[in-house]
Length: 124
Image 1: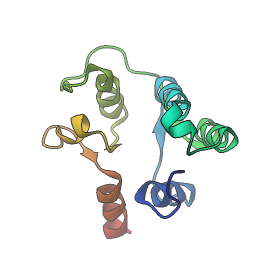
Image 2 (image 1 turned 180 degrees about the vertical axis):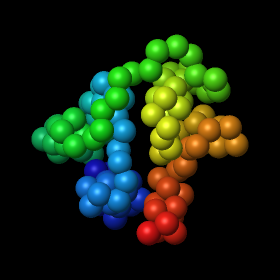
Image 3 (image 1 turned 90 degrees about the vertical axis):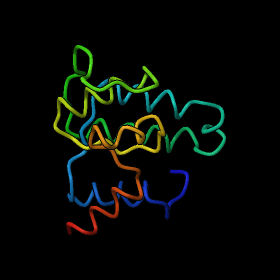
Image 4 (image 1 turned 180 degrees about the horizontal axis):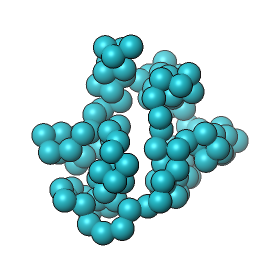
């Protein structure tokens, strides 16, 4: 949404083309919705586009219940722990630009958007 030619936009298009499955939970969607409302992002992404993305994810992503309990690996940012637990419970790769999560790449399957996109190209 911030850069139509960036890796996240390409990943979104690849997902919509059916190249991989997007796993989401209620908490993940709520966090995205909250983040899109932050003044820093709100100034760059109009409300209509933000809502369209949220609606798309709610409609098209594979939804899974939010995991209960603590993950086996913890982030330096406790707010990220649910993502680790979600990825583990769904058997999914986490795609994030968050340095706390990326710093755990030797312990959990996490990739930056650019690295994940490169994986998709290598596999495809």
